[in-house]
Image (cartoon, rainbow, N blue to C red; front, side, top):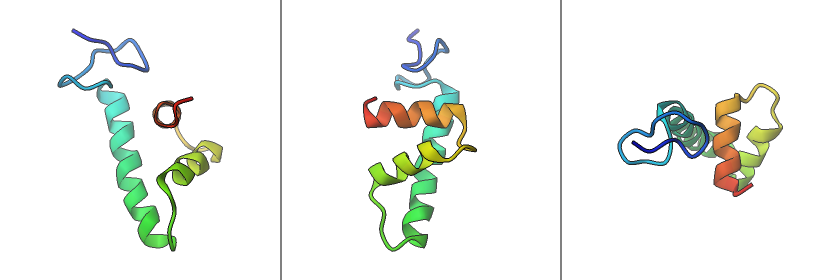
Length: 71
């Protein structure tokens, strides 16, 4: 079985993330839809960078963001 790209947990369904990082990614994706509706327009990259600066953004979410931004 493969391990998560961001931790040592097992990957689910041939993806690159474990269940916890997949949940974080799902939350990022659904949050982006909400932000786009509430803000005139925000690029996904700017959305991710903004979340990185917010102190209450969770560790798992920040790890997924860093992966998406290629850092």
